[in-house]
Image (cartoon, rainbow, N blue to C red; front, side):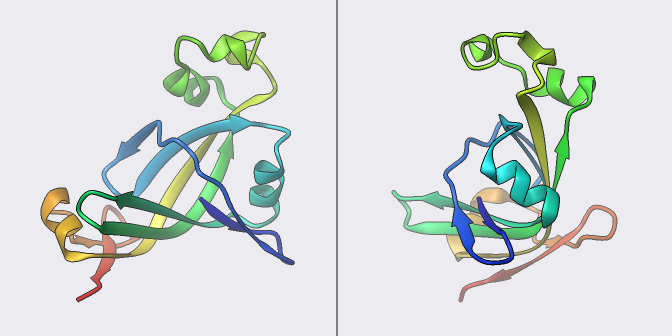
Length: 133
């Protein structure tokens, strides 16, 4: 994920926990992290997926919401998270990031692998994606 603090750009590898098509991606992280502070001040972000074997990639640009409601936390909670969040799913150090894509760029092989999502846009359930041909 790429974020911008207003002064600098930051990039961090993160694990996609769930997705709703290509326009919604859920991740989790530590509430007191630098990343969460940046997203609270500036919700704009970019997520990039890569398939090294096929030499293809997909870049999504959008906004991130920092969620701490019980439903969102329970949705992403996994066995073993207690190691990092000893108070469990209600640990104040645990939060969910919900990324909503507004646009994207990709290489052609990703389009074939992802199926019929090529005509999404940010209004409703669609996202405009431009191929890198």
